[in-house]
Length: 148
Image (tube, rainbow, N blue to C red; front, side, top):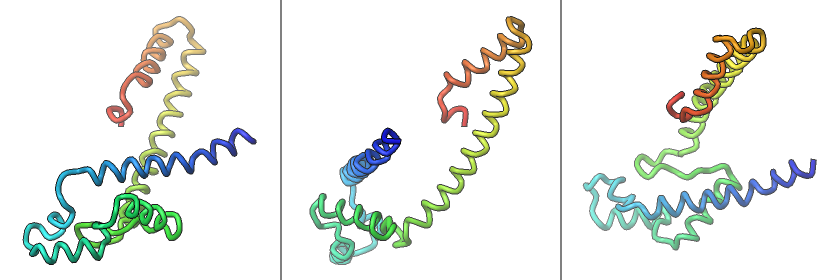
């Protein structure tokens, strides 16, 4: 129990560190969000006003802190820079598709694993056993994204 609790408590600083690194990498990308937002059509004054409204002119740690606080306090993942729509809806839609894919993959992996394991146990040192070992080795060796 204490191990599980300790691991659960370590999740919080890990999530903060990951969010900081991702936020820093996104901030270091070349280009400007206002240029993407206005698609080269807005005036520099419009772009600057939009950046000021969104808080994009604030210091990096201030922007990151505001983002983390929004996520923790209200579940607000901010708005898209392109169309000003909340990002949370897109995340939920993507998460649903991801969970469906994960569920199918787990069911398929369990079924194939049990079938191959049973056949290998029933026919030890046979071609079926060697084929089962080969399938298991390939399943472990191939990159997950390739199998997906």
